[in-house]
Image 1 (tube, rainbow, N blue to C red):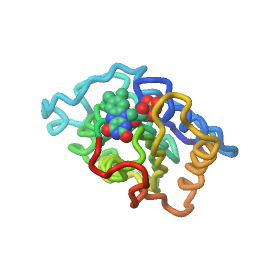
Image 2 (cartoon, protein in one colour; image 1 turned 135 degrees about the horizontal axis):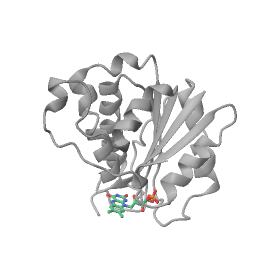
Image 3 (cartoon, rainbow, N blue to C red; image 1 turned 180 degrees about the vertical axis):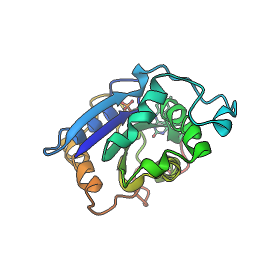
Image 4 (cartoon, helix red, strand yellow; image 1 turned 90 degrees about the vertical axis):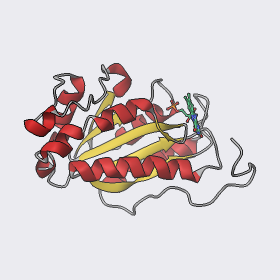
Length: 198
Ligand SMILES: Cc1cc2nc3c(=O)[nH]c(=O)nc-3n(C[C@H](O)[C@H](O)[C@H](O)COP(=O)(O)O)c2cc1C
């Protein structure tokens, strides 16, 4: 199985370490792209993709979208930033507008599966994970990708906060891609912090 890992953190930190764990699974051919290493031109809303196929930018993000359907699975990792995905993730996601406008890429999908990995510094905000998941799910729908679920890691803030159990759980990402039980964001607030305290 060919799996593309897309990392959205601006630093070589926790979500990238989890992505590496996921891509280390046996029996897959993994490849990783860190969005921070690409030139991240955001969507200009220029409308050109509504008139003819493709994006006005002929850059690394367009090249990455062109290759998306060469893989059977996609694992996307991001930190939570201000209750959402990191800006790098959002720039990449918004650039899917050309695919949505043209409706041409999603027909190429042929069951490409996608899984999300998200880390957050706080322990008590499952809503942040749900926000991140909703955005990612919409991206999957617009690209014709089959969303297989997510793995969520609260209370991971400084680089090195990951536990051995976090790393073990990240390795389940490939199992999700292959059709295991879907992961969903934690629904309960963990004891120890007030739900509305930031
Ligand atoms: C700009 C910024 C915004 C953040 N916003 C949140 C947040 O809203 N909620 C939260 O739980 N953690 C937040 N964090 C903490 C990160 O999610 C946390 O440090 C995470 O481990 C970073 O992942 P990384 O090491 O993969 O970059 C924020 C960190 C930064 C730098």
